[in-house]
Image 1 (cartoon, rainbow, N blue to C red):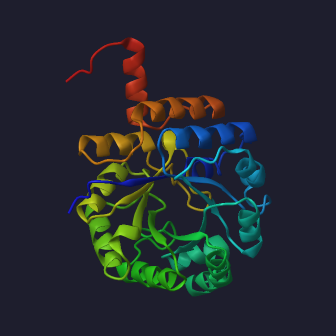
Image 2: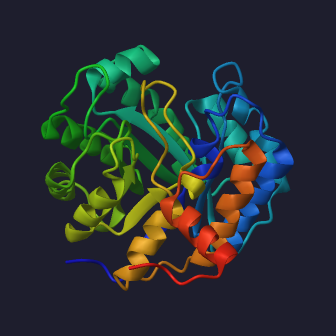
Length: 307
């Protein structure tokens, strides 16, 4: 059941950087996207087209998209919350738009002041316009394994949103553990249920590492045959609407796991370690990747790993 190949969706340039208080230069963002693509990442979430009032870090989305080197075979995704965002994405020649909803009614109300059903309905014209323009559409379901406001989220609620996003024509659907409370057992249960209503090969896992469970959850999802995983180089990220949520699982840690399992990703781990060091220095924060830190230390010392 474990897949032999996995697609990594790198979310660092968008989901990873969006919550940084100090503005990250456009040049740095462009360099980050380009380096990730050169390292073999086949799908990079490059930026978002949202109001700079709400996410000032992403105010340069158009400049980022016009400045990157388009690598053949690489999908460049952007987050689009509404038709205005979609128009920006279309002008920027994005390959894929990302729409989003929550599996938690409480989170939906706190986050965007509407019900789950209302939030999905708002994306109907966006998804249709994207399909008419020949763009891929990805749907992301936040709080699929737990909510900061209501606590437990039922599997039925997750399945309901998967079915709603399927009806919108989503090419892929992300099952996201926004606050990182999920455990391997629950991850398997949710993925198994979602796989009954949407093609398994087009489901993806998006795990935050708040409770240190992200790598374990990825292994659990692999056992359910899930072939797509989101990760953020250097473990960048966190959700501004979910108190206490830490960054996405580090791409370096995910690729190390997959390499150890003999699963093909096409991503160069050594280059990832360099990229993680680059962006960590650029924002003035230590890398949250355990693998990245360990491999950098090993390089610097020249010593063999202890056992």
